[in-house]
Length: 269
Ligand SMILES: [Zn+2]
Image (cartoon, rainbow, N blue to C red):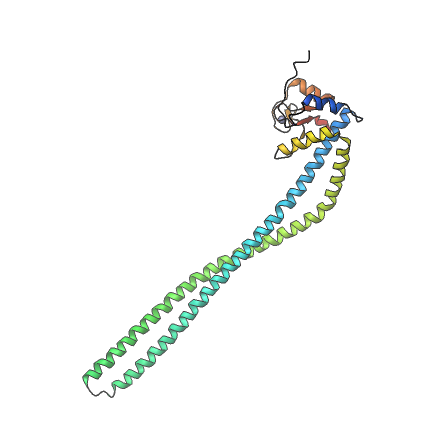
């Protein structure tokens, strides 16, 4: 006679049929409408707790990532500052070489005053020419190093700007996290008490089913109300008319035939 019962795909444990859970659900001290309302309240509390945990769950990671990024930028900036220092040393060495070249040239030029023969004259001129070339090379090195320093300083400015922005971000995130932890601690406590009170009123089999459905969806919604008059608030598929009538009557446990979530009267919202 009752073989028209349609088999429903649901995350509810396959070992037990939905019909038996439905029967079990009805067979309790609490009236079915009260039990449905309690299930909905349980879901609302769990969703609110999920939200708090999610908020807290992401912020510490964000803070950690920002701290790591700032540390990396600071290391980079220290490395560039070190490079600039090296270029400055290189410039100082080359300046010293120029002074040395000048001194040598002065010396050879003085010797030119007292030469004995043309061979000595050629040799001294050759030395002077050499010192001139060395001087040019040193000047070229200084010019190049100055260009490098200019580029490195620009790089450093960009990094410093980034560090400043990230540091502000970090400060804001840290404050946000501290505020959330502080402000949600009480809310969470209340929600958990509320949740536990609801859960205590629901029978074990229904609670097991509820937990399993919750775990099978990424949004952790096991109990949803009718959306927009005729759709499942979880998967948004259209609900069959007979099912809609049953939901409105609060007479029994109804699940969505598309996603398997428990459907309740939108009046509960
Ligand atoms: Zn659905």
